[in-house]
Image 1: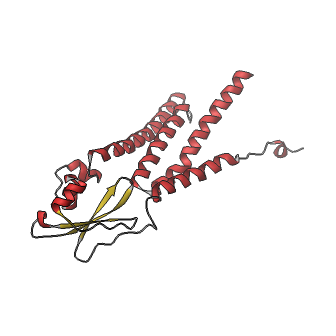
Image 2: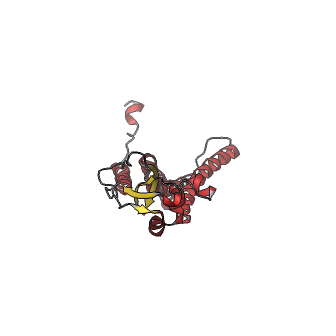
Length: 211
């Protein structure tokens, strides 16, 4: 019998593939479920528009300029088809807050909000989750590099997979909040692969202990 025939066949179990599909489906549902038909609102001619998020719903603020900012008028158009009545400046502030008004008229005094494209301190928590996830991914690369340099060979330590899993989950959550389908797609398969590698590590460890 040839040595090639004696080698065990390499196969990947169906469960990881199923989990990847399930993660992707979950991400798609979380990103698109608040949106009916993925409608992209269009403001009236001559009106400006500013992106708006209300809870999990997204849309735009239609801004009809007036002689002054306080005399401008506003409408909220969400992707689920909702169109609000026309608001005066004071009515808009009462309904959506001063930060949303400042963002709509381009008058936000918080440079951090402008840089991160957010309108409230609550949104900063989600941005922090995204940054933490990215930091975990940077950390996993540094850990793998340092361990490999120490051993003078390419090594993937267990901590690499733990940091990958933590970073993947955080970035998946962040991209869902941003309703960024590309980001969700990128993390869906990765989270399953990282978890699967950890399971294989612990399975081999249990087998070695039993023997």
